[in-house]
Amino acid sequence: MKILETVLGKMSNINKAQRNFIFAVLMNLMRLRGKGNYRNLSRYSDYHEKTYSRWFKRDFDFLELNRLGLEHLTDKTMILAVDCSFISKSGKHTYGLDKFYNGKQGKAEKGLEISTLAMIDVDYNTAYNLSTRQTCPVTKPNETRVDQYLSHIKQDYISLPESIRNLVADGYYAKTKFINGIIDLGLELTSKLRHDANLRWLYQGNQKPFGRHKMYDGKVKFDDLNRFDLIDEIKGIKLYTAIVNSPCFKRNLRIVYLVKQVGKKLHTALLFSTDLQLAAKDIYRFYKARFQIEFLFRDAKQFTGLNDCQARSRQALNFHFNASMTALNLIKLQDRLQGAYEQRHVISIASWNIRNANAHLLERFSSWLGFDFTSIKSKDGFESLCNYGTVNM
Image 1 (cartoon, rainbow, N blue to C red):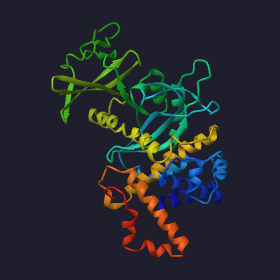
Image 2 (cartoon, rainbow, N blue to C red):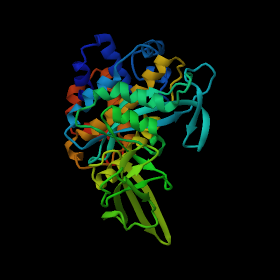
Image 3 (cartoon, rainbow, N blue to C red):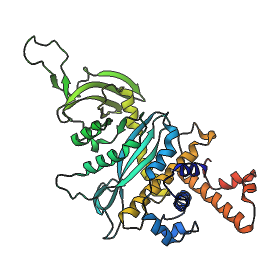
Image 4 (cartoon, rainbow, N blue to C red):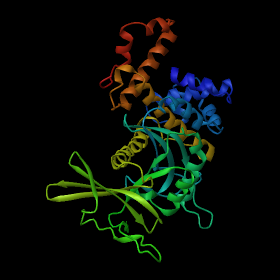
């Protein structure tokens, strides 16, 4: 795969043996059938399962690999997104086992959790993993998991292009500690508030000649939208916006109130951004694009073995999580770099998984039978054989 070969070639801090192993791991995860554990990975390469076990315990800079692979996308409308995902794991001695919220079950369960920092191309409507870190059990006094999520961003945001300054997160991250931490990094946060959020209007009238100036003009009530600016209506969703003050966060916010009438029911949502100059439409677009990070978790669990690591050490788990998410990146880049699909925003990871597996099988056949694989790839029927069993390739 030329993309992976090019990126690994730019990484001067790794030796040839590690470069060859990383190439083999990522290629195998892209065409894997079944679980992504050591034994199954060994079936698709010349490495023994114990070799996989040893190499997974070594450090590798996946952040740099992802940064180099995505650097050609920096001229697009890119934002940063952060979110967590529950990883099911049994056993008693695995690093990081704790009670974490499992969105699939709607409750906290014993297992692992990963925090992922992703770059989202808003125009192309897809997300790419930048870095993934495991959430550790909280052991220090006054520490919360929000501190760990902030620490993750602080360590890795330095690799971001300067053009990316907007971070999008769901309503869980709308906390004073998190917002202040993001602002201190020079980033702006776009997120979601509760419907009953305590907000105050900014006073716009005349001020008294003496004494302290009046700053606020009453509580924001969403049953009366006369004081909001109606910006646009997109697919039946009306966008109302205003700049207000949040007593909880102790700062001014630009809010966007979404209103959609569905039959007799009125559906609403309250978005906000700490960037007061950000357009209301962009706040809506950015938060809508945030959901693409959920597809990263879904596709990695279904196709690149995110849930399948049998290791228990912190180093091996970290290697596995990042390798799985990076393999998904490579599949998406592989799809995007094909000119025929430049305008297609929907990608079938299942089809690419089948295609990569077929191509690998043809290469193995040619090797065993003594054929020249280079000449086979130039045949007209090669693409048809690679796409055998795929959907819309």
